[in-house]
Image 1 (cartoon, rainbow, N blue to C red):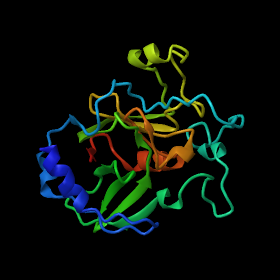
Image 2: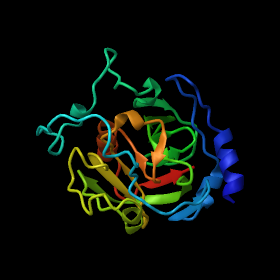
Image 3: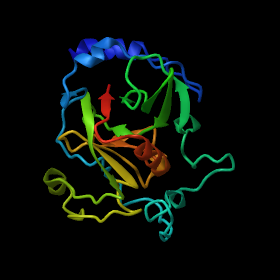
Length: 237
């Protein structure tokens, strides 16, 4: 069914190359997908979970974390804004903005368009909030319908066994904090290992880099976290 659904959904999306977005519309067929169903889109790969990228421990050094009112740390310390206020290396169209929404999903629903690399939060009255995201790299993308089953602030991270076999140099456990790959917040999806979570690498937003998780800038995932309730419907296409 997904083979019929995805083209219909994507055909209803008006994707622009600039910050202005057209209406997002979903067909009624979306409702026919069972909750907690996951269907592969790309070639299958091992289920590594966690949204972790292989280059996590590389890159430039980061500043010493400082306490703040945002749950213990200030995410804005971990990027350098340009003169225009956009983090260096981030396309401005991936910044949070309000857009038109022409679909029938209820307010509070999260819609993740993997090819677009946008996450939409339906607001009602024909409007939605749109956030830029990072998605699974080839072999790790997926589609389905879930619900947010739990939420965590500055979540801990434990690499799955499959990942540890591939990368025995990884830590067995990481406490939550600015250096943690799950970032400032995490929304857990159904019974899967997939999450919508923050990132300490904001320049990866708009790219396909994760092991299946949906990553956001820390500022954006904090904003989403505060707006979304446990039980919210999440549609991934």
